[in-house]
Length: 590
Image 1: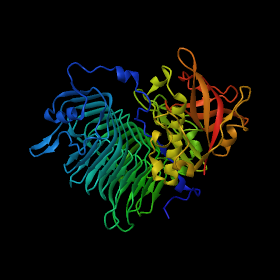
Image 2: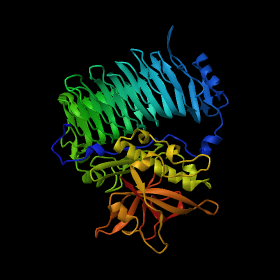
Image 3: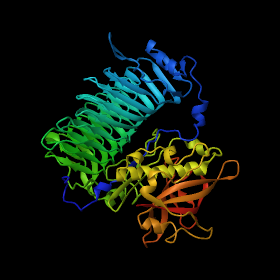
Image 4: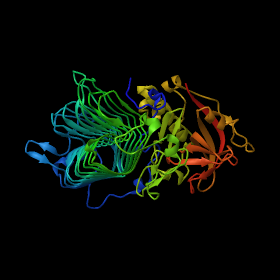
């Protein structure tokens, strides 16, 4: 059985983290990106051949003039990196201008593997979608974007896909293998797997001497046991290893695991960072579950092992599983030599399963959700009292952090909607807006089920995999999700009927989720239909329901709906003018 503290008995096998892939443009491109013009001095890239030619001038100024589909290229060679004559960094500028590079596949024997092998220049404003990276060099550094960032700058870059390092003593990250430069406003929804020994992270494998800011990772990170069933490395939801470097305004939501035989190996596993030595972590958090089994391992909700780390305004709420003989805890597993500097660090003693930690202050779920914890800067954090954990609000963030994090029956729900950046969806009439929003809500539910029940086909479900018919633009409740959940009938709510126990609130009291359908005013006249997913409600001092809490699938905004008027009353300036609920459907997880 997993080793835990003596807290209440919790069914952690059904821990549910629905952390969705933010960086995808799902329906229509943002007008701002479409209208962006290529800088006059840049070399325009619009085909796979153009992209391949970048390697001929590693100091050039490049920009994407169109999306590029790389599915016709069986094995793309990394641009720059280790060559027969030494290391060749890309030293120029690569501006994606909001465009996508899709279906990139690299299976390389090189040491530095990614779209670019190594970087000393600048890469910005780019999305890599469905990237497959694999390598086996004994000194492999692998990521979807970069093998190594040698002092360069990466900004506004997002990636999805898989990185597999089939080697020991390697380093792999969802975006970058090894980083000593600057990474900001970037994300990775990438599954990262590594050999039994090495450093693996959801965003960056090893982070030493650089800065990560306003960035996040949602993918699962895992070390793979060797032939003896042993693992011995560092694994973190954001980065496996951090040295003399900084993490600011960032978070991770993915599962982090390093299994192993109890008598072999030694791992450092954390929801945000696996192993930290002299790092600085400020205004950051982790919500993903963490597990390890190798002997003398350390596991922590935020950091596995911490040595002389400066921690400011941090928290963790993920479950921590450990069958090792090493120290484990809700926030920090091993505060090595007690050299850390900590100011305002907390963990949830209930969701983590640990009443203790190497450091920090333990809080109950109710206490941690009651308001911003002491020491958290109100201008950089916000919270929906009694519903969410703290989330980041720093200017420049291109995502809404997990706003609808709620705990029901000791099960942790984290909803990060799929598309949160394209507010242009509401600037004009949106074709098929009703089906598109419904399909997005379906995808949230499907991924929640996939993680909770271990259904591989649902864990990383795409919006069009089961719920979006491209030819007829219809959303349907179909696919294997129906084996794990049921959808009630669509029931209208009369204009004169308030939201209450006989409609929306009743299912919510029963711990079910509820799909809300409503109408809103479109710019220039007319109206549109939108779907949201209700997950909770709040009550006043007398116990009366005063708001319904729901998630808008496109903007990522958590909204509050007045039960009497059935209209969105918060946040102020919500882009769907006069959105009003007129029907609901109950969703029951079987």
